[in-house]
Length: 443
Image (cartoon, rainbow, N blue to C red):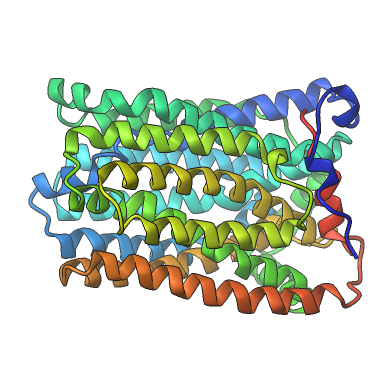
């Protein structure tokens, strides 16, 4: 049915790169790199748990805010994906950058439960505005320039550069906080403002058909237009079981990476006696591992299909978390780095699979928001469960139960995917897996 990952093996030199990039395509990639780097450069990430504890919040309040954040993200994703398809992904990226800038200033102005709740609610709004729009802009923009084969590498490269920036910045958080305590949040706001500059100079109408879409948006009633887009997206998901299955497959990757690297990172290290002063260095090491893997998805072998690779990588992530309960501090750090590297391989691969499975003419940003809604909904439940486990002092049980659940879900889903792959799929995106296989060369 599908060719192996031949495009991911030995993709070296100009001949493996496909068509040369046009100047406009290069500009899209450069500005996307800058936007992703600055928008996601959250200086407060290594210390936000301890920062909120110092502000007087309890574990229940901290994890409660996280659960509210994921639920809010789901609710915001419903309209924002449709907004991106109506007003254009570029305008949505600009709006997201503005909201993110304001969000990072909230804890500075109000270092309290209310301030942190507003902070995370605003982050949910800002990230939901960009979660589908950024990927849709890059995918459609490169396709319009005849450079669609460079998407996987461009997606991974943007993630790798953003992670590399975190490696350089996060170790500085501790010393900077000693000078001025709110520095991590002030610098995060400044970075988000920089991403707004990148969004402002992005090329107009990078995606084909945006001009027609924009004109249609101006001549149609807003409520009816949004309802039509939502109906189209849901109809597309129902009519494309392969797309729905790929979205579900990505839940494990997103949930495990998010819960580990954000919610459980500091509790796991503290549980193994690793002091807070070392957390920035550990997170930097994890980020290096993830950045290297994100920039080199072609290192994956050619024996398995991309779909099988994502499931296998999900199992590896769960196994690394469970294994961290068996060793000492150095073993934990090593396994967390392995976990991060596996995450780096999985993210761009999963995103490319979903994008390739979206039929031509479908509202791409809206469909990517549907995927994000599913991811965040599961994360909201996982955050509540994590808070309950930690409150009961059952961190190890949480990690082992997560591994078992992931293993069962992936095995069942892989069987369903194999059956679905054997059935003919209609439309121009009939073979999403081979398309991914042959387009992984270096740009």
